[in-house]
Each structure stands twice: as structure tokens, then as C-alpha cells.
Image 1 (spheres, rainbow, N blue to C red):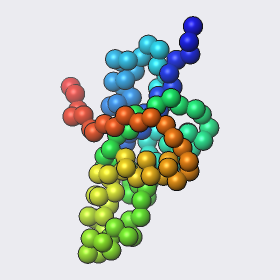
Image 2: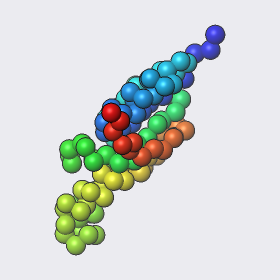
Image 3: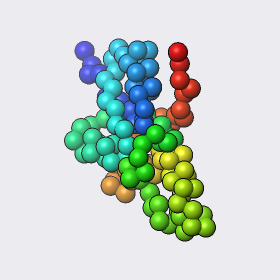
Image 4: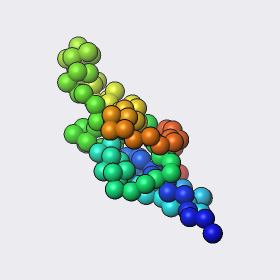
Amino acid sequence: MSRPMEVLVVEDGWEYIERARRWLGEGLNFTRAGCGQETLDLLAKQAFDVLYLDMDFGRIPADQLLGDAAELTERFHGDPAEAQQILAANQGVYILSALREVGREIPVVFSYDFQPQP
């Protein structure tokens, strides 16, 4: 019997992990990370076969977003709110950049927020 595939679901909510467990559960183990730093911490402790990565992290506090907010604020004419929106909307890319910086290579499946289901 082969071991289950280890999937790290990186998202700012709970929709992806809940749906994955409901629809894909057999033969797969799912672990959730809620922000970039949590992703880096989990990958340092455990081996995962694939990363399922949300791209938009608009629901986490600004201090949990990876990326250079000061540089983006300067680039966008001193508007910190716009810089934060850009960081949040593209957080998946910043997470991938952080993984590359620490030398982590892992297959990635990109996703974008599902609309809430009743």
C-alpha cells in the first residue's frame, strides 16, 4: 500500500481545505496554512508532495502579508492602502518568491477564491 499524498493547502480562509477534504479525501492528507510565514514554517517541519495555493489573501491582517509594503507604497504614489491591496491580491506570488528564496521546490497548483457556497 502506498503512502497518502501530502497536500499543503495555503489559503486565507477555509473553503479550499473543507472542499478538498469533502471531495478528494481518499489517498490524500491535507494540511492548511493561513499565511506565507505559516507556509514556510510548515514546509521546514514536514515534507509535502504538492502545494495548493490561493492567490488572493484579502482576509488576513496586513502584518501577515509577505512582500515589501514600503516599496509598493512608494511605487504607488505614497498610498499604503493601495500597496496593501496589491500585496493581498497577489500574495500567492509573494509566497512563491519566499519559497524560492529559501530554496524550496515543490509542485504548485494555483487557485483563486471560490464564491461562498450555501
